[in-house]
Image 1: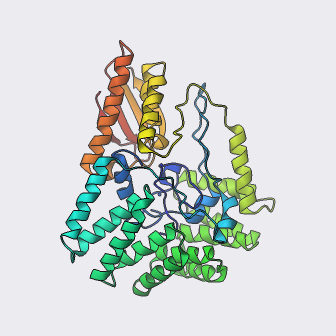
Image 2: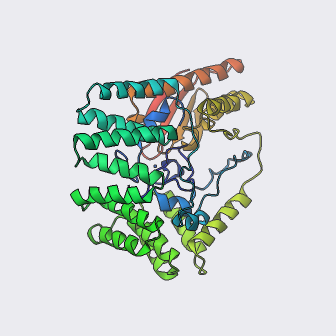
Length: 424
């Protein structure tokens, strides 16, 4: 888990959260709560199931840059949020960070019913390890959206360990829940038990190091990071964490050298670019915290004022409100094309992942998305999302008489593959 991906909104990195796939950081390697591996409506649980893990330290120092504006487009004012970035790091290290940085989003009824079905199935099979692993895994991901599921995730993982006290997923799951709650003592305990059985897991050992760091034991954190890099010298997360740790101890030169190594190992251009920006900002001897604050101020100063061309920001945590905001954005558009674009950009989960909207022909639009896990979604959830977008586009066409029938292609940015086609 090294750091943890935050699937709250699919974009941006919030304090105490983790490395978010939607912000441009890599999402490869996610698996069952591991990191990095980075909601509303039917897509929410699909995203939770596809993503896990996250980047605790990354989230403090590498906030996602805003989406570049197109000519003539204004930027809507963002909702108030806790300060992201390294200014929060010292408080977190001292144990004062918000133990639950995620806003609660109510899961839709069909997702709740799906989870309830898994629970009923597991309860009917009290010794079925797979059933309880599945339930615990889904509870854990649901807790990333609705924290009320965290206790259920803990109980389910404990049941897993009752069935098999040496189950690696159960040990790691309990550690991950504790990690998210910043219960560092329990996280360290369960990561340690996991590593007793699987000592060469670089992600878990990096997480263990991070928990020592957050607990104030920087010496032990350094030992754990070094152990990871002795056997995995190309492990990006450990190099990045080492850089943050050195910086926190005032070792600026060592911090920059480790950060340069992390940059060289990063596989995604946006990640390389953000690390390069941080390196440039620290060239004068600034700490990571000072440099990241400077970068945030520069980004805020360069952001144009709100304008009619941008979809309104989602102001509340409720999934229904998020959906209503997306629909309102589409309804407020003055053209059919604008309504279709606002429908996607205003969506609470899909919106932050939209990187481009192009109209190669009058009756065809390509929605290019970064890190949207269409292929990983269960069929019912994928269809639910697509149906919602189809209805929204159909409503937009009805509002603008004479608009042509339009084929909507949802395209993966990295591969160029058309993930889905909508015919309103």
